[in-house]
Image 1 (cartoon, rainbow, N blue to C red):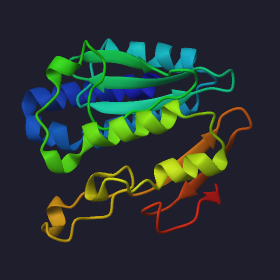
Image 2: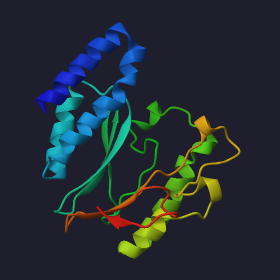
Image 3: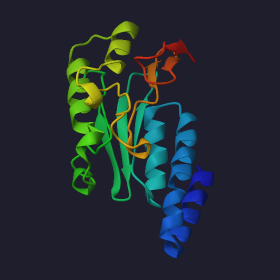
Amino acid sequence: MHKILRHLITWKKLHDENHQLANAACDYVINLMLRELLECDSVAQARQRLAQAQAIGFGASSNIPCADAQGEVVSFELAPAGLAEWPAVEGVMTHTNHFLCDTLRPHQAVMGQSLSSAPRLAVASAHGARGPHDWHTLQQVLRDQSDGLLSICRHPDPALPPEQRVESVAGVIMNVTTRQWWIAPHVPSDVAFEPA
């Protein structure tokens, strides 16, 4: 954890001197945080490490889904405005690219309709409520194309310039009890889920 804190302190100093360069470094800091969380044995331990990092502050917003072998499932929402948790409902957690927690929702940046975060969350939540789920039904959820370019599984919109296209880059299914996971390493409807 001390490495992450050292990097966050460095980021804060850099932000005070050059906020544009500091913002470019945010992805690096988030990746350090993710790597640190992979070392945790439980959601409780991840929560503790995130709380320590929050004491310094987060330089960018992120959503970190987290689950452990004991069955605890939560999505941590991180932002310069703070840290919050979105809980699972009956073991199922759905989240997309916007804040869900009441404490962070007022800090959400306005998002264009092409990002489809809210419609994708509605579809994912509807699928989640239909449980129980197994490996096959989870694949179906991640391959959902029920709303065209606004679906859970997104192909890039060819009508948009390449730099504005949004698409699914992978689908991941995890069984945290057996510590197995599978990945579809591209748009999930186009490729198979393979053991990782």
